[in-house]
Length: 130
Image (cartoon, rainbow, N blue to C red; front, side, top):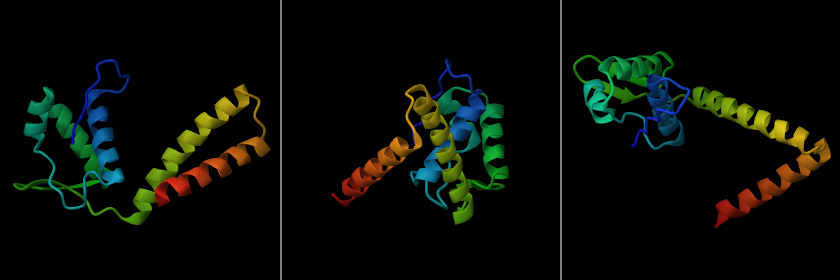
C-alpha cells in the first residue's frame, strides 16, 4: 500500500490518507482482517503529524471501514455488502454526473449516450473474458 500525499491537492492531508486507504479497501488491495500500520508508523513514513493519521483512522472507524483494538492496532473491517454497494453507487453517480456535463457540452443526446454505454459494456465484457 503506497499512500501519496500531494501538497497541490485541495484536500487536507488526513482526507487524502483516509480516501486512499478506503479506496484500497473497496478495491480489495487491503482485505478484511488485515492489520494497518500503526498510527505512529504511518505518520513517520508519510512525514506527517500523528494527529493527522489519527484523524484519518478515526474517520475510517466511524464509517465502518476499520476496527481498532486497544493495544493491538487497527484492522480492515469485514465489509458488509451494503456498505460496499453504497460506496460503488456514490462513485458511479459522480462519474455519471461528470459524463453528463461532457455530453451536454458535446450536444450528445440520450440515444447516443445509451449507444455509447452499450458499446462500452460490450467491450468491457469481452475484455474481462480474455
